[in-house]
Length: 428
Ligand SMILES: NC(=O)c1ccc[n+]([C@@H]2O[C@H](COP(=O)([O-])OP(=O)(O)OC[C@H]3O[C@@H](n4cnc5c(N)ncnc54)[C@H](OP(=O)(O)O)[C@@H]3O)[C@@H](O)[C@H]2O)c1
Image (cartoon, rainbow, N blue to C red; front, side, top):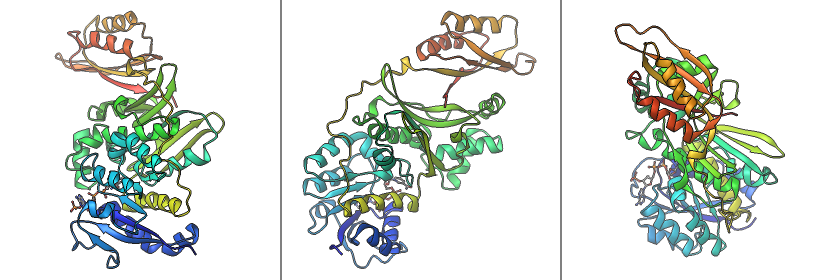
C-alpha cells in the first residue's frame, strides 16, 4: 500500500469533529477504497480540553494558522473554521501558497473568494475541493462533474437550507405563523440565535453561486444572485398555496435564459405533485435538468456533523487517489448575468382589500395595463366593519418588471390595506 495521505484539520467544531470521527471509525474501508490510509497528522484548534468523542492524542495540536499552513509533511489542509474572511481565508491562501491541497466546507468563503482561490490552486496544480459546501451530505458537485458530465445543463435548482425548509414544513403541518415556528426551531437547535443568514436566503445564495459555477462552467458570481428570504411567508399564503395545489419552498434556482445566467433565491410556489415539494423538514434536495439525462434529483441531509463529514472525506479520498480535478473550470466560461427584471414566470399575488364595489376592477386594470394576464382569482369571506379580506390572484407567465409596475400601482390603491404579497411560481 502507498504511504498514508497526511492531513490536517483546522477547526474541530461540528464538522471538524465529524471528520475526525469518520476517519477513525471507517479507516479500514477508506484505506481499501483509496489505496492508502488517510492519517490525521495535525489539528488547529483553540480548545484542547473539549470532549470530542474521538481519540485525538496522536495528531500534533497547533496553535496558529501560519504554523499549520507550512507544517511539514502535511499534504492536505481541511479548512472547517468558517467565515468568508479572516482566519479561514488567510489559512486557505497560505496553505495553497505552500503547496498543500485544500478541502473546505466553507460556502461563504467560496461564494466571496472562490474564483481567486480556484485560480491559485490551479496555478499550483493543487486541489481545491468543496463538495460539503453545497447541500452538505448530498454529492451534487461530484454528480455534475462525473455522472452528468456529458449533459448541457438547462436549469439546476434545489432546497439548499434545512432551517428554512424545516420552518416552511412546520408552518404547513401545524398551521402556525413564521415567528412562532422560528422560535421553536431555535429552541430545537435547527435555527441559529441570529437566524438572518438562513432565513434571509444568504446561505442558500452562497450555495447556489457555487452550484451554478460548477453546473454551467462559469465563475462564481455571488453578487448577481437575486436574494429574497422567507420572513414574509405567512400561514395564510401557505393555506392558499394548498388550495391552489401548490407548496411553498425556498429554492435556489440557476438557469440559462436568452438574457444570460439567471441566479435567484426566493420562496417559490411549486406544484404539490412535483418531487421536490415532498422534501420535508431539514432535508435538502438538488435537481439537475440535463439535455440528455432529463431530470435527476438527489435528496439527503444538507447539514450536520456526519453528513457533512461524509462529503469532506469523499474529497479526501479523491485526493488520496490522485483524481481531484480543478476546483472550478479554469478559465471559466463567461456568462452574462440575467437581470431579475427580465425574469419570466407566473406569479401568486395576495392582497388584503376592503370589500367595496370597484376594488377588483381597479386591481384588474393595474394588471391589464401592464399586460399581466390573470389565471385565477380567489376572494375569501365578506369584510365586516371595514375589515380587509384576502384576495389571491395567480397570473400567466409574465415579465418581472411588468409585475413589479402593476404591484406598485396596486399597493398604492386606498382599498389595499397591506403591502401586497408576491410569491413566484416555479414551473417544474
Ligand atoms: N455545521 C454544518 O452542518 C455544516 C454543513 C455544511 C458546511 N458547514 C461549514 O463548515 C464550516 C464549519 O462549520 P461548523 O458548523 O463545524 O462550525 P463550528 O462548529 O463553529 O466549528 C468551527 C471551529 O473552528 C474553531 N475556530 C474558530 N476560529 C479559530 C481559530 N482562529 N483558530 C483555531 N480554531 C478556530 C472553533 O473553535 P471555538 O469553538 O473555540 O470558536 C470551532 O471549533 C463552516 O464553513 C460551515 O459553513 C457546516
